[in-house]
Length: 81
Image (cartoon, helix red, strand yellow):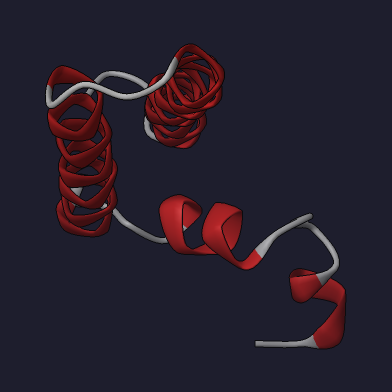
């Protein structure tokens, strides 16, 4: 891969998703995000102080947003899948 090709992507993850024809890398990343979100939810459900709750909820929201962005980036590179 040339430096010019590498310049097409802002992030390594974007490059990975662009080259991920079968969605295997996408699925692995989604699973990591899902596990992170479930871990945050378990922590919240176990009971935390209000200040910690707000922080964990923002983190959980960020993970959910990352999941959606990841799916959109992959779909943009692989329309029709």
